[in-house]
Length: 123
Image (cartoon, rainbow, N blue to C red; front, side, top):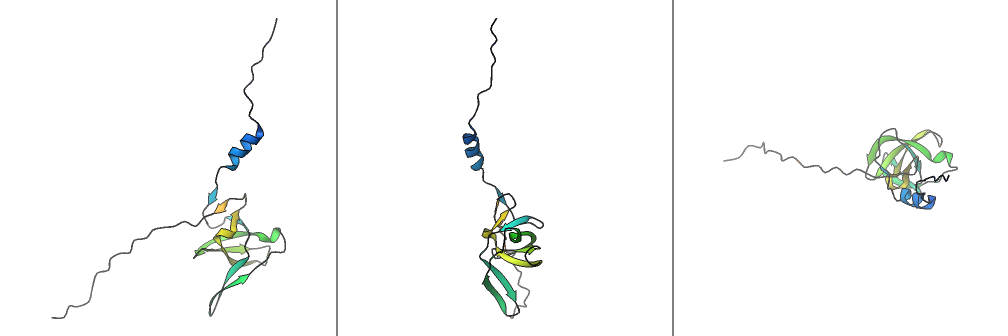
């Protein structure tokens, strides 16, 4: 008597890995999101205006932060507890999610409301 075992076709891991890498993952900057910062510059707000300064991180640990939910002109505010415990403003394109996801800025189209002319017409 002969026994035949049927097995399902096997897929090489390299093909599965390639297909998985093809999936694009993006996150929107929201409050509480954990991020890794790959920034070489940051925006610094002062009494006289906004300046851009160079930054560098001592180790991988100090490059982790949490978004505060504030965004402005392509920058996000990030709370950096392991760096200095303060909030810093980094460019959105220099931030990634915990698992390597890319952060993208959400664009919201706003329509300007037409204002009524309340001025008194002169005769």
